[in-house]
Length: 73
Image (cartoon, rainbow, N blue to C red; front, side):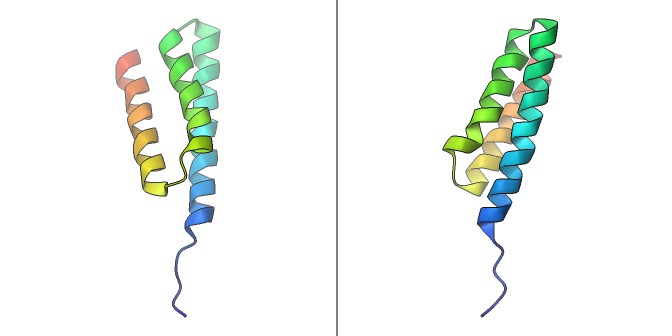
C-alpha cells in the first residue's frame, strides 16, 4: 500500500493555525476598537468548524487573511 498523505491531520493542523491567527486578529481588533479585523478574526476562528475540504479551507482562509491585511492598511 503506497504512502498516502493523511488529509485529516493536515486539515486539523490548518484549522488550528488559521484559528490561532484569527484569535490574534480578533484580539487586536477588539483592543484597538477596529471592527474589520475583529469580524474577520471571528470568521477565521469559526471557518474551520464548517469547512471540511482542505483546499477550500486553505483558499478561503488565505483570502480572509488577505482581506484583513489589505483592508486594514
